[in-house]
Image 1 (cartoon, rainbow, N blue to C red):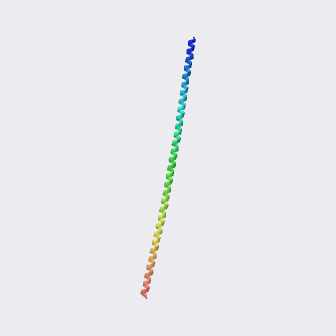
Image 2: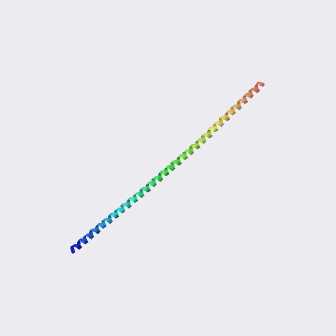
Length: 114
């Protein structure tokens, strides 16, 4: 009887030890799962940050391109204005030369009549 009782106690202790091991194993598994989940969350956050940086970089690049394009358009307009001024200046010079030539011709005619 005593021996049977000792066996039962020993068996209960073994069961408790096994149960404790299982609980510890389950706890460890849960901790590993939590750690893995935290790592995944951190990875997602890092990916979001990287994506945001890329988007901001792309936005900045687009803004720089737009600024450059506007600068080129402005430069083209200034060149057109300068070209137009040169053409107007050339036209004015030609008109002055024509006027001077006409005056000379008229003067020659007047001298020829004298």
